[in-house]
Amino acid sequence: MSDNRPAAGTHQKAPRRGRLRVALVHDWLTGMRGGERCLEDFCAILPGADLHTLFRFPGSVGGPIEARPIREARRLRWLKHAGPLRRRYRWLLPLFPGAIGSFDLGGYDLVVSLSHCVAKGAGEGQGVPRIAYTFTPMRYIWDMAPLYFNRGRFGAPALRILQPILERLRRWDQSVHPDRYIAISDCVAERIRRIYGRTAAVIHPPVDLDRLPAPGPGPDEDGRYYLVVSALAPYKRIADALEACRILDRPLVVVGTGEDEARLRSAAGPHAEFLGWRSDREVADLYRRARAVLLPGEEDFGITPLEAMACGTPVIALGRGGALETVVTPERSEAGSPPTGILYGETGAEALAQAIRRFEKDAGSFDPRALRAHAERFGRPRFREAIRKALEDFAGPLS
Image 1 (cartoon, rainbow, N blue to C red):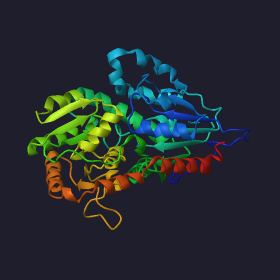
Image 2: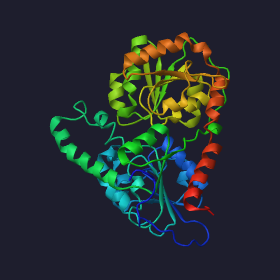
Image 3: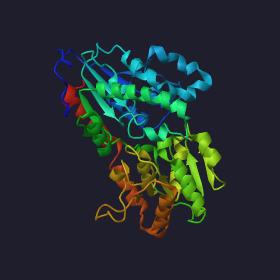
Image 4: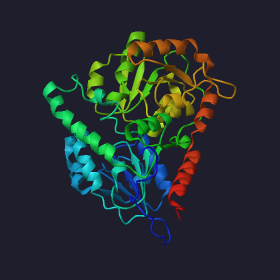
């Protein structure tokens, strides 16, 4: 299929009685990242929806999510008690399609999934209308598979074993589809078209401006640092930021945790400081005090650049993916759209180092108040209104 219409017979809407009964589905709940912040907004839009997830680590997400009854896939509930194995949950990826399909969602009027892995498959074949807010098709098995599965991370025998597993996952991923896709960015909509053969509307994720203070007076330029706020995963290319700051002898602060943390720490020099996880308040202060925020990987959309801009801090980002939709360069700025950052074209530490040099020559052109105003265009009220309209256009009044 080349459009967003469901195949014949995939669902029939039964007559409704009262409030729409909705199932919310999220891949997993193990920390507060961009996807979980979007989920908080869906919880506000759909206050009576039941929340389903493959597995969760209690206490790892925000109050609006934790306060809601959460239903986990029965076959993965043991994972929360698995001790050190909890950090290796991605190794269980081959089990996830079956686990997401084990939810009985046939009694709902609507299934709304937030998917970057398998959540879009929830309710498949159960006769219920389904709509997926899609962060990306599974990056581990598609465009970014070489970053995850390569000779630097696995030996040749392991890679031979992994290839048929990845191929089975690709076949599954191309065989299950919601009735409607909503993508978080134009670049994700293009991936959905290319990989799934479906079209997708685009609704950009929200920035929670309430937890990000407006720009204020910052420290002197001398001694200010560059900042990375990111999951420490292969596709984020944090090693490029470490090496670029080493080349330039610039201080770098890294906030975040993830599967690549040990490798990155071992490769970092004395110019880099790893802070691990930090509270929202601490991260906001780090944004405000930073010279610029670095994004060396291709982002599906990228909330971090907008969070930095909300605090008055410009961004230096790889000019691919979602950054093209959020970062306004001096070359692209127009009246009413002042610059918010620097984009560079090629991956790698040297290209990033050159972009940092360009930024430092032009640092005075970035107005903190204009950066904040740009971020406000992506605020929560705009997002909630757009999502509610999309859901009601698809399924009818929510209440």
